[in-house]
Image (cartoon, rainbow, N blue to C red; front, side, top):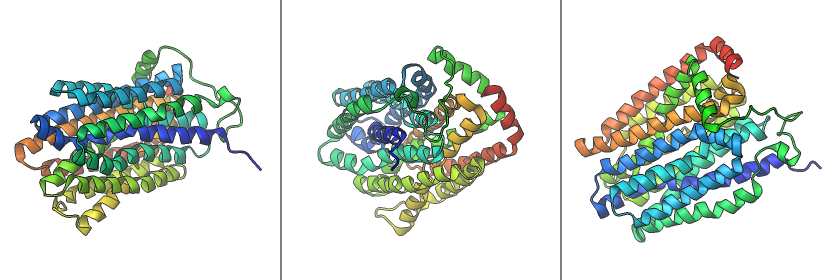
Length: 419
């Protein structure tokens, strides 16, 4: 009987770690109204802290990928979890909005940016040759679902015991994962005398060098390729339409229509449940179907769904809203596995660092959307314009993905020159 390959154990540890780090990423939507009530801060001010968090979350990603190559995944992920725990725990002492930006924005943004999707891409590159798309889908689902499934619990805590209890709970959850990562996660198969799952010989790793210098060098090489900018543009819109808009503002938007925060958080948790199905299926498909076709399909469906969302809000959960939640959940981060696959295919061994930069654009888009949506609500009294704008942008993302499809020859050239 064949023994279980160590890659599956490493992937399981990474799955738990990503869920633990995702906990604090769940709190922005839950805490906007409590912070507004306690401190009198506007939604625009609170959304600015969310934007800084998302920005750091994204901009740290490419450097984290290079740092993992230089110092190892175990050290980087352990430090990242400690940053998340510290940032979350220290928010209970804040008294001014700049402290929210410093802790929630900078500290936690840097910690979470050192993990999540870049961590998943790096791990699958090192430990898997077969089943890469599937494992990428599972780990991606862990991050997104961890954010959303935490929501009802955190919303209930914030409502019953105050937002500080919710923040401390997230801090404790991140700390609890640290020993698991430190003792069970390993950086490469070769470290324990193995090869990656499905590989026939040990992998040749990229040449060493400064992590920051390598990240910048890879960016310079990738930026000369048209396909890179199509992926960047599409993924920026992906971030704007998920984390930045729905993840941050769905709960307060539902609250504007009379729905309780716990009920609205539960709807986002349902998105998280269906996200598992959609993202794992997307990972499976990305092993079998042209990833560029998948992206075009996903962005088109997401754009159409957002265009109808403003008509679905009500004080109670209507069947039409449940249909949207299920449909949107299946498409929440289904874009990630095919995007990772394209980065790997086009840019070769530098694919994980390139994906770090592509993911940075995801978070820049999310940061802009979070801030703009908050200001829109402050000035117009509702979020309708934000929903419609995101829907139209998703259709543009579908067009950019289609352009990647037509650039097959250029993609092969890029793989040779950059990979």
